[in-house]
Amino acid sequence: MPSFYEDNDDLRFYVERGIDWAPLVHLTEYDGRAPDAFPTTADAVAFYTEVLELVGRFAAEDVAPVASRIDRAHPTLEAGEVVTPEVHRALFEKISGLGLHGLCLPRELDGMNCPFLLFSLNNELLARADVSVTAHHGFHMGMAMAMLLYSVLEGSTTFDQENGRISSTRFAEAIAGIVSGAEWGSMDITEADAGSDMARLRCVGVLGDDGWRVSGEKIFITSGHGRWHFVIARTEPVSEAAFGGLDGLSLFLVPAWSEGPDGARVRHGHLGTVEDKLGHNGSVTVSIRFDDAPAHLVGARGDGFKQMLLLMNNARIGVGFEALGLCEAAYRAARGYAAVRRSMGKTIDRHEMIADLLDEMRTEIQGLRALGVTAAWHEEMGQKIRLKLQFFAPSEPGERASLERQLRRHQRAARRMTPLLKFLASEKAVEHARKAIQIHGGSGYIKEQGVEKLLRDAIVFPIYEGTSQIQALMVMKDTLLGVVKDPAAFFKRAAASRWRAVSGRSAADRALARLEVLRDGAIQHLLGRLLTTKVRELRHQPVRSWRDAMRGWDPKRDFALALLHAERLCALLAHVEVASVLYEQVRAHPDRADVLDRWLDRAEPRCRHWHDVITTTGKRLLASLDGAEAADQAAK
Ligand SMILES: Cc1cc2nc3c(=O)[nH]c(=O)nc-3n(C[C@H](O)[C@H](O)[C@H](O)COP(=O)(O)OP(=O)(O)OC[C@H]3O[C@@H](n4cnc5c(N)ncnc54)[C@H](O)[C@@H]3O)c2cc1C
Image (cartoon, rainbow, N blue to C red; front, side, top):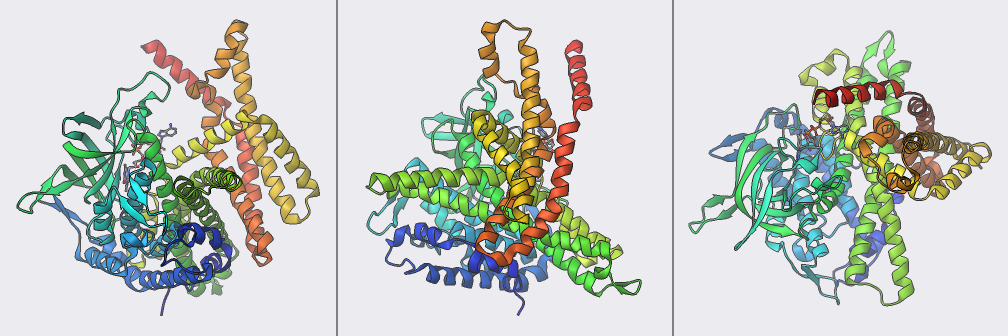
């Protein structure tokens, strides 16, 4: 019986040995408070494994065989409603039947109470069969979890302290609809003039006598034909401050329809178009217009951007696992074909260049999985510790302080790793799909073979949930500001890496330290250039204004070199992060040394390249951009 879980040794390593399940199970089971909690971690993990075995078989037997039909059968818009093809509907009925829409929801909300990390692994398995099915599935469970999380954070969920069960939660009706599979949600951010630049959002939320109402049009909304829409809308005027456009946004949950007295659907959100896309055809993408739609404010007014980031962070981890599943599909198709296709006296997997491509794909998949699992683990640990502190805080001050420290550590790690994962996995999915086509030769370009679909599906990863460039900007900003906040710590760490690069205790330790030296060199160069530009500018200003000038950075002008090299810096940091994660893994599991060695082998020359480009290029392009800007000013 084919199974995408059982045939994957690397994935099984994480479930069986690589994931530190104990603290996660402990938190997920509210410290064993609930009467139906798993008695031991081993019992919980045995159940999680059963779920993955089931999903692995479902992906291999039910989803993969219909992936090309899903790709060809497009949804349509009829009388203002989306009609999905039969093959799609039948598949989602099966997913509902398996109970997967409630995988991580608490038992009292009809869920299975599994950790969110299991949902990520579930997504990888499904994405290996078809990423668009995974995307739509994600807008069920993911949105129900978001409703619960937002409600917990704003204080509209109550818990029974005795057994850790939820007694009431604000969006219970919506969650119940989603768990049943009849309903799902969406995340409505993008507008015609506002994609990456959320400060330009124009959709508005207005508070009237009968509550909040939302108006405006959102485009490119995945699964936007569902009932529950998280809509970000402007509730306050744009302020003059830098990035002030982000301050006046609020988050709303907007039902796209309600039931009229006769039971008929009364629409508040009107579907405009169903997009005809390059790929991802099992995932419906629509535009939707809200005209004075009744809306529920989520959290505090004006906090919308912050709230949306929370949702997007989870979604970015989700995209990381979708991309990973697609990489796995591309690698397996390429490996299978290369093992039987003969050329010049041998199968093509014996030709050096093809063997190298396959080895590279395998290594990168293992690196991405290590990063993905670690990022998802930290994100979930952070969220669950925060929940524990809010509702079940220990009375002993020392215990509480220790939890708070753990919370900060997990949050820092998740914040650092999430954009790196989204960036690297998305870019690799496109590369791997392209390589799979190349390894298939002419057959790869022919639709019947099915690998060209992977490339069409993959190309959206670096675009949605924040483009690769936007991930790179976030990583660059966090990295440089982190150093500016505590330069002493940075230089101390950098010196330690330089020392380890020559005197580390093992070849792997020295190789990892060499990567860190390249990373720190690139960061130091960008910061050095940034400060030099600033100091040069200060020379022409009175000394008394220096303090203000040093405080007031103009991100466009002062960070130009860092902005130029943000993607390279992000790629470099992602490679070092994967190396560090694998290095730690090998300390606990020495049999994984081969994965680390292969990663280090490929990472070092790449990091050296990015370091060299960052530290030696950019002047010419920035001068030409300055020239273009000056010409624009003169023309005004
Ligand atoms: C299939 C699909 C599904 C989607 N699903 C959803 C959804 O569910 N919900 C939703 O709200 N949106 C969704 N989107 C929209 C998606 O999130 C946006 O397309 C994306 O954020 C980019 O915005 P944009 O298209 O306006 O491009 P732009 O923001 O105009 O960007 C164009 C290019 O410029 C680059 N760029 C922009 N600003 C900068 C900068 N400061 N520095 C460097 N480069 C920059 C971008 O990286 C990109 O390469 C979806 C899109 C697609 C294609």
